[in-house]
Image (cartoon, rainbow over all chains, first blue to last red; front, side, top):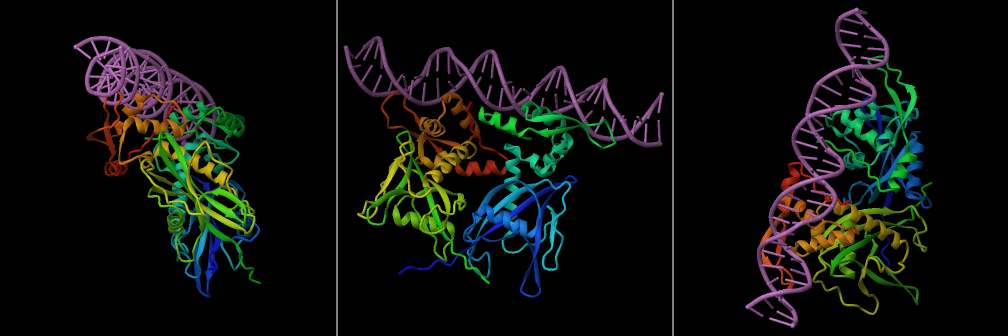
Length: 230
Length: 230
DNA sequence: TACATTTGCGTATAATTAACGCAAACTACA
DNA sequence: TGTAGTTTGCGTTAATTATACGCAAATGTA
C-alpha cells in the first residue's frame, strides 16, 4: 500500500551584486532540447547526501565562480505542481550577496553562458524563475531596512556616498544624505580608515569599514539596526 | 549516469492557539516501532499531485480538526541530512494560527493522541521538531510586531485587555496598557461593537472587532502596522 | 583666484514615543 | 445603602527621535 513519492527537490540561487550604482542579478543560459535557450537562475537537483545549503554552494561553484558574502534561504516553491513541465520539482530558493565591484565571473563555455543582468532589464526566465526573483527582490528590500546586509554588497572599504547610493537605488527612494549619515554613524558600527577615496572630484572622502564584531556586541545588548525613509 | 535522487519531502505544521492568557501549540503522539512514543508536530509526506500547502491542510485535517485562521510557510529544514534517522527527509514547515478560545480537537484514538501544550511546557519532541518549534516561536514573535496577526489568535469579538495580554504573554514584555490602546486605536483598524464583555468584575468593557477590509485599504495607501515596546 | 563639486558637521522644528494621573462604571460585601 | 476593590477609558506632559534644512571645508579645474 506504499505509494512511492515521485517528487524531485532542487535548489535555486538568486545572487545579487551591486556595481556602478545599479543592482544586478546573476543568470545562466540553459539549453532545453536542441534549440530552445532560456536564461534561468543558477541551480539544480540536490544530491542524496549533501545539505541544502551545500547544494547551493556546489551549483554556484559549478556554474560560476562568485564569492558569496551572505546567503539565506528565501522560500520553497512547491505550490504550483507544474512549475517544471517535465517532472514535479520542488525548489528551495536561496538568495545571496556578493561584492561585485571587482569580480570576474567564470568564462563562458559553449554550453553555458553566465551573465550579470540589471535588475530592471531581466528577460523572460525559465520556469517560474521570474516570480522567484521578484520574491527575492522584495525580501532584499525589506531585509536591507532592518539588518546591515548592505555592506555585503560593497567592498571591504567603501565611501559613505556608495552606501547611500546603494540604499537609494535598491529601495528606490529619495533620502537625505545628512540624516542618513548621522543615523548610521550614531549606531557606531562603522570604522573610519585612514585612507581616502581615489576619486578626484569634490572634497576627498574617507573610506569606511563595517565593524561586524561591534555590531554583534551591540546585538547582544539588544540593539536593533533600522533604516527607514518617508 | 543518472544518479537517482532518493530524498523524501514532508510538511510539518506548527499550530498556535491562545487560551486563558497562554500560548499553546498543537502536538500529536506518534508511535515508533512497538514501544517508543514521541510527541511530534503534525505532518507527513507530500503526495505526488498535491501542493505543499494542500499537504499541510490535509495532514492537519487527518490528525486534528482545527480551523485555521492564518497559515504561512516558515522554513525548509534540509541541512541536517540525518534529521530523520530512517531516511533522508526534507521538511517544509508551515506555521498556523487558530482561535482556540472555544475549540474541541479531534477525539483521541488508541493510535494517536492530539493535545494542546503550553509553550513553556513542551516535552522532548521527535526528530528536530524542538528546534523547528523554536524557529516558529521566534517568527511568530517578530511577525506579531509588524503585522496584525494577533487577531487571528482571538475570537471574532474580543476585549482590548485580551489583545493586550496576548501581546504581553507572547512577546514576554511589559507594556503600558494606555499607550498600547492609544496606538492600536490610532490606526483605525478596530471596530467597536455594541456588545459588552460578560465578565462581571470591574467596569464593563466594549467588545472590538478587527476590520480587515479597512486594514487592507490602509495597506494600499502605504500604511505600516507596527507594535514596539521598550 | 574664482568656480564647481562633494564631503562633513550642525541646528531648528515637527512628530512620535514613553511615563504617568485619574475619573467612570461596574461587583461584592458589609 | 454605602464603601472597598477592580478594570476600563481618556487625558497630559516630558523625553526622544525624525525631518528639513544651512553652510563651511577640501579638493580639482578653468
